[in-house]
Length: 280
Ligand code: PAF
Image 1: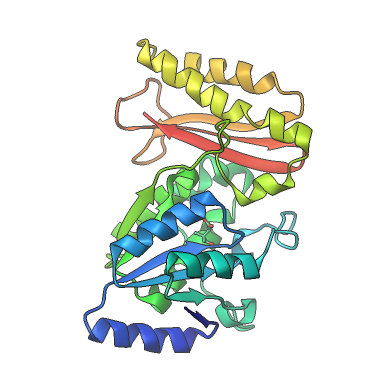
Image 2: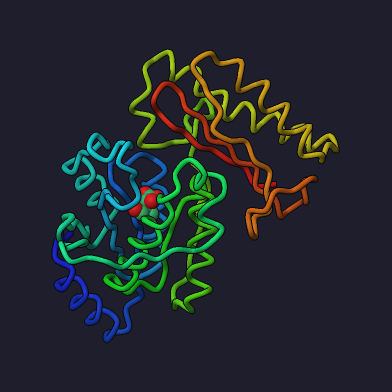
């Protein structure tokens, strides 16, 4: 496994792979791997000839008040895990390599980035789409894998790929959960043991609406209110949003439309912000 830190070195390497007819697969990450990342990397290994995992804590997707400086990191452990799975290259640039001092260009998918998580994190998706497009041009992948845990991120990147006619195939991978249902996230590491216990309300709320929908309830207001009751039962949890929206354009729905609906929530537990979702 090779570790490449320079943009030009990886671009040259990718051009050579492409000229030899190799299929390049990219798994973009910010590191501090958990089972969610590893499931993407394992599937990535199956999807093509060359597997590149990028590991870059992207400063442009963090607001000044957010956790960029404290975002958890363990490069040695990530390197070992990636090597065990058979990753070919870890792309590990520093901030200056990705955003030199004269950097000025940002990519914004309008509207979609201002809904759901975009209300409390108005510059987040602009940072994500900017770095993801840069990774696409550097790595030149045929296939890219993302997790459905970040459903809005996936939907926005799909929109960008379609709008800009990018020649990549996106694969969305299922959410990986802890045994008690909490969606895996690098930020779970911030939770105290009491907060960690309370964090199970996110999935409990989603399971509850799933079973109500199974019983025939489709009214969004009723489903949202059931979720709110469950989430509010945890004393340290503050709701950022609970939304029932179209998977296509993130517009609010009055009723669940089977196969076309995203039910997502974001909460603060202490200072930690967690998200989760289901598609129904
Ligand atoms: O999902 C993430 O880890 C990040 O948002 C991504 C896609 C690697 C961009 O920095």
